[in-house]
Amino acid sequence: MAAWFARNFLKLALKDVARQYEFPVKSGSGAVLTRMWARQSRPLEEAAVEKLDFGQDDNVLEIGYGRGDGIAAAYNRIAQGKGVVFGVERSDYMQDVVRNRFALEIAEDERIHLDRALDLSHLPYPSDFFAGAFHVNAFYFWRQDRMHDILWEMARILKPGAQLVCAVDPQHLQKMLKWATLTESQCNVLRYIEHLEPAGFENIKVEYHPMEGRDIQLITAEKSSRGQTDDPEEKMKTLEQDIKKFMLEELIRQKARPGMMKEAKAEKTEEPS
Image (cartoon, rainbow, N blue to C red; front, top):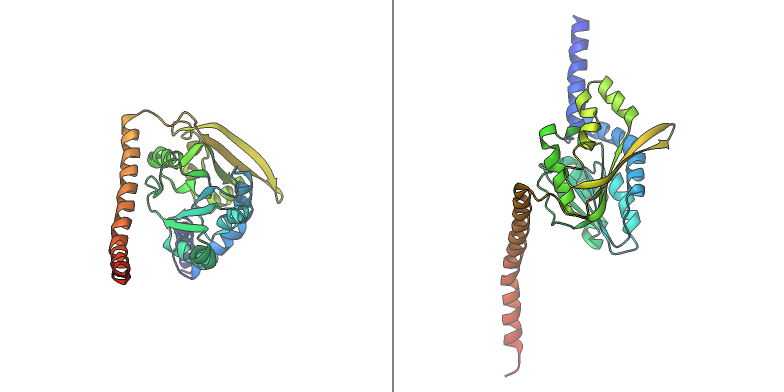
């Protein structure tokens, strides 16, 4: 009986680990596990940012920012310039954690901008906007039938020639596979790489870098300077994104008009006759 309870407890615990790894939620286990994973992935975040080619006046994006170590590394690169670090995350818990961590930079400097997006194939950014983008421990959870759409969207928001950098720790993946936190299919880097070129990337490279007694993989790709495919469906998708951007800007303008009209009326009343 004790063995049965032990097996079931372990099974439930591993399920919780897998759920937290994919989509962290606010809880005791969520706090402990995300801190542990953040320590493990911090060197990868820093390596990805170091590899990324961008300047202090550029806009750069992290996809899946976790506890914000990648955001911090990117912010250090643009702190003396006019650039802005953007981050997009699925987990509202992680968003709250990072908002608190960078409260000053977000509220006063406006040099860090965080967004939440459950569907990475519909990102809230205009086309050709970022000088670079990076992600760590993210693509494992992108379904195979959605991989092209997600990478196509990332190519859309990057400037022509801009880099996408993905950092992978093969040793860590083997541990996740051993403990059934990830499946063998999720750990397969090739299913990510094979979709890069069809999505509009070129100069795709996989490099190995020694780090703390192990080798990590840095996958780099550049958005094609020729632009993306001429597929009508893809063009329609870009058009829809541009329409959404226009509607959002128009809504902001409409909300601002009543206040502007009141100020104009007040100024007119104060003018001498």
